Length: 639
Image (cartoon, rainbow, N blue to C red; front, side):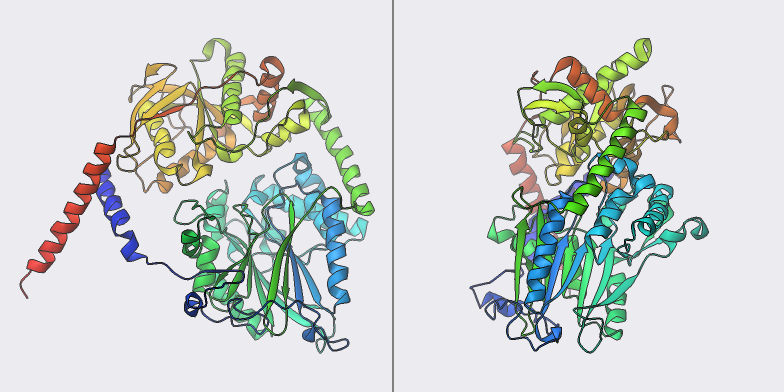
């Protein structure tokens, strides 16, 4: 009954949505339709201007000597570097842009919106060497936000990273970049985590001059996103304040402190709207930017001049202007350096500068990275017996991260197959035709044609670390009921069509579905190793530890309709997943698979769609009839 009521509600919502949520004006860069811009609220800061009203004017237009307030501000920014940036070239580009701006009399601020770690082999020394944080401090970042993946190793490892960074920064004579987060606090023992307990709520700094009479006072605050917070494995130890409340408080505090420009470093995102990723190249979808996490932030909170948006790796080549706030994003992995120039007459310019191979490498940062790489290689040899440059195999086919129109990702399917083969080897006689699950979100890098090294394979599955300190999350074997396998397949059939990160790939599991049926009721049949799944039977499943821990989130993300809990072979819920760990990391299982099998064998699709136009029509008619009945009842009521 609950599923039916929910399905009816979704149908009614989808039919009424255009009326309930009419289009809103959202300008991109320089708008040519002045009538549309009448609906856009005026910017609040003297530094900002609705670009629909004036031409862009760059910084440095006749500045008074020594007074940066008459020149303007240049904001250089990155987000989601994930241990993967070309730091030596990025450092050179930042220096060049800083010099260029200062020569025109502009103040310069360098910022990052979080997820500095998790994406390359450098993260394996996260808590013992603090490579990412120290590198960004050496480059000269003025402030850095925390992202969800910065918590992947747990609170204790993050605390150790801060402790290590402080110690090594003193040895290297490098001032640490301030970390800022305004809506995140500890529910755990604060005395146990002194660094995490004392993160900056807001920051004010003078840029251009330390003299308050000549310097421009910048106000900064950071926010963790709702979705980002939900993916932190041990977020029970953290408290997330409502973003709009924390932002309003921060803006008020910064204004009282005299900030002339207020910038938010938000790890929220500007790509996903209402749980879906719209086609942003389609102009009609522009108003949906207001429904993204950082779009809602700009809409709901007055006083923010710029939002640097992280988390979903959105590359905004043109900024989004909402409620007079510039929402900006530089994509991910340090492929671009973002640059916003704010002039005192209210105009601005915006560009993303590619970090390309033709840019010279900064010698100091290059020397530091080479030193770090040697330390990482030694760590891999000690923990895995492999050097990071060792060749695993040669492949004749490249694998990217683009999901095919039919919902397939060959690389993820090969990974799923590697889990099954490794489980069968490790468990021998106790392996019961295991099924494997690989979420799209854990596949972090592609593979190119030619030699495949240890570093290449690790970068594909680079999340996590084992209790022993070995790089990568370990495999986990558990049991699920057949009805839970149906629920898992419903994620693909219902949620994943609008949210790529929710898509799952399998080995040994295949399902048939009909997208014309109501949400969460679309799966028609599920097969395990070619046999129909029996809903009350237990099935052996292998996946990564991170994925297993997040299975409990399925209930909340599906409004309580879907539920999955890992169990042992007797059907008892596993309270501590450490009990179900196999002695092998995900990436090592994949490396062994590539070495033995290559990647040339084509993989089968794990899903088959049966579209039924008649059913779609019947559901639409049913929804319209419910609306008609409701209207008739309202009109027929006696006054």
